[in-house]
Image 1 (cartoon, helix red, strand yellow):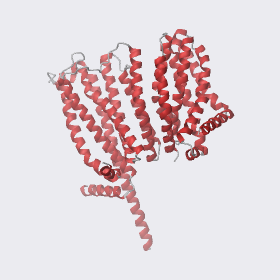
Image 2 (cartoon, each protein chain N blue to C red):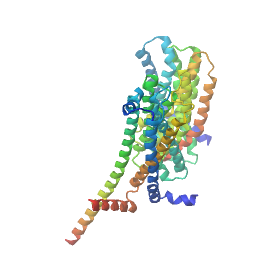
Image 3 (cartoon, each protein chain N blue to C red):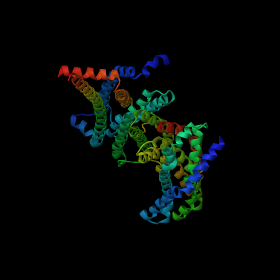
Amino acid sequence: MFNAFLQIVRKELLGAFRQQSDILNPIWFFVIVVTLFPLGIGTDPALLARIAPGIIWVAALLAALLSFERLFKDDFIDGSLEQMMLAPQPLTWLVSAKVFAHWLLTGLPILLVSPLLAVFLSLQENTFWALFLTLLIGTPILSLLGSIGVALTIGLRKGGVLLSLIMLPLSIPILIFSTMAIDAATFGQSYIGLLALLGAMLVAAMTLAPFAIAASLRVSVS
Amino acid sequence: MWKWLHPYAKAEKSYTLSGKLMPWFLAVALPTFIVGMIWGLAFAPADYQQGDSFRIIYIHVPAAMMAMGAYSTMAIAAFIGLVWQIRLAEMTVAATAPIGAVYTFIALFTGAAWGKPMWGAWWVWDARLTSELILLFVYLGIIALYNAFSDKVLAGRAASILTLVGVINLPIIHFSVVWWNTLHQGATITKFDQPSMATDMLIPLLIMIVSFAAFLGFMVLYRFRNEILQRESHRPWVIALVQQSSSSVNKRG
Amino acid sequence: MAFASWSDFIAMGGYSFYVWLAYGVSLFSVLLLVISTVAKRKKIFKHVEQRLLREQRIKAAENREGTL
């Protein structure tokens, strides 16, 4: 069973390295969106540092949205999704592998470029670490939540906009808690409690979301 | 209980039953609405702080409560529909969502119209208003998802799944918004909090809540019947129903 | 009675605009919901009726062909 998990992850990663634009474009988009804000509102470092957490998190949300489309789409078109449903391994498990691979390809790169953005937005070191940790815990939740939305809308012709309408309201708590943690770090307060809350949400999402995703896929592929 | 309930998993039976129940809900909703509204608008004493603007409470609070009530109805129906594979329950989800959305809109709008004289602004990022706004987004998402599917059976199931995802998320959203709000707004007093209301203010409010709840029930049943009719429109019993109604119209005309 | 006269009632202690706006918009949106729901029911009935009529016409046409 664990083998199947690894195999799916490997297959996803290989496929992504063959089509590198799929991974690079959302990251590229993420960086561009963040760059637009200083251009739009001015370059005062104090102001930028003040609004940086919100900007980075909203940009991460939008970038995640962009990347969701490829999560199940190809598998849906070429029929391997149906095969996954017929496989002896539980669908929830296979779906978790897909989501994990998706996070490796989108969440992780966002983490990797975040130091660059910290420089752009004149973040202090303390604040940057808070940002990094919230991204580390928060982006997997985004991947899980988004996968539910993708699984629900995959069979539809105009699923893209609908996906964002469904998913964005549900991701508000992550946005709120993450930016609160970063704010707390900016003011030199402890933000462990907020990280723990995010962690609890991650655990809850990891246990519950695969079932929702599997159920939604069964609706979409029929 | 299942033996008794089982016939109602048949569309025609539930159509007839809901048709029988509908007048009762209306019979509760209309008189309580008229009494509650007149009492609240004209007879309840004015609030000593907010004057007569507090009379908006008689629609704001019932609408907000029943918006949540509608969502709970949907969540229970979605759970039943997904676990026991009962399509009628999934239809209930689809039938309830627009009513919940309208109630949420009313709660939001009346909140804004109340906030303008109280806070001096139409919109304040008050915790309750913000979570109502997000609830409206969730409702609209469910409705949009339901309408996007052309196969209504699949649509009902997809909407049910989304409803259940939402029901886990909504308390977290509410909690996070409340917390965020206390952090960002500090000492603003929420004007909607009425720690202790005078009895002659409270009674019309309770009457209005009953009225909104009964009206919710009435509309759910009405829309539920629409859903059944639409999905079963090729069945003999629906055809018989249509023929009956058209012949009675012809006789009158 | 909290108000001395009709005009007092309409004035709502100076908050007339907000109170009546809130009540008006609420009533209006509920009315819209009711109207759309009832219209939906009528539409379904009409559709089924039209389908039945069409089926009848087709049947009638088939019968006529048989007699020719």
